[in-house]
Image (cartoon, rainbow, N blue to C red):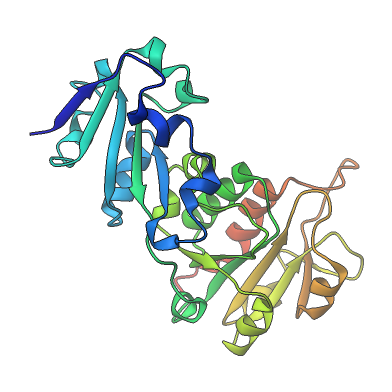
Amino acid sequence: MNLITEINDFFAPELDVYARLTEVQLLNREYPEKGLFIAESPKVIERALDAGYEAVSCLMEKRHIEGEGKQILARLKDVPVFCAEFDVLTQLTGFKLTRGMLCAMKRKPLPDVREICENKRRIVVLDKVMNPTNVGAVIRSAAALGMDAVLLTPGCSDPLYRRAARVSMGTVFQIDWTFLPDGGLDIIKDLGFKTAAMALKDNTLSVDDPRLTEVNKLAVIMGTEGDGLSDKTISDCDFTVKIPMYHGVDSLNVAAASAVAFYQLANKRSGS
């Protein structure tokens, strides 16, 4: 049986984790083993539970107890569940986007880069992509279009931030990912990957160049909005790759570019 408590006051302490702790406070960099994240919407929560993440508490709109949230509640038998009317919950930033349900969950220890890359053939490296919406969208494209793992440099937004996980539609729980240490490109090369920097430069390979799909182990490196990849990162890569543009368009946003690149470079369609 669920332990359901109705909340009538937005400032009730039970709402602190959802309403008043920042993403950085939830992450708890000093004690990462105590870190939390917030999963939004039944679909995202379900995928997190499927991936073995442990729920700490749940907050939902009262009407969803016998509605959209019922299936999730059946999996949270011993977890405190807080409910409230819609007018209370709409004081939480972004609650209207959550489809009526939030869940505080424990983080897991991040896996080692070498562990992530073992037996992988196509990986994504995000370099200083700070916008959580873009991180979530790239991860969704990577999972959907056949990439094997996502690695992030320390300057990237965390994939478990609320917006990133929501935009990913929970695919952040379905594809392997971790953060790279400094000098991570050297680690990737040591593991046998050829590196392809996505950059709008002259003298580059087109994304549909057959030489790229013939590479056995390929890491696709993508940079942040605006600045893109640094000149040093590009020069350190084995290939520089661009998506051909038309009608005077000079670039795609990193999320859109990732979908094009992953579809072409994942090399899954041939059955390999």
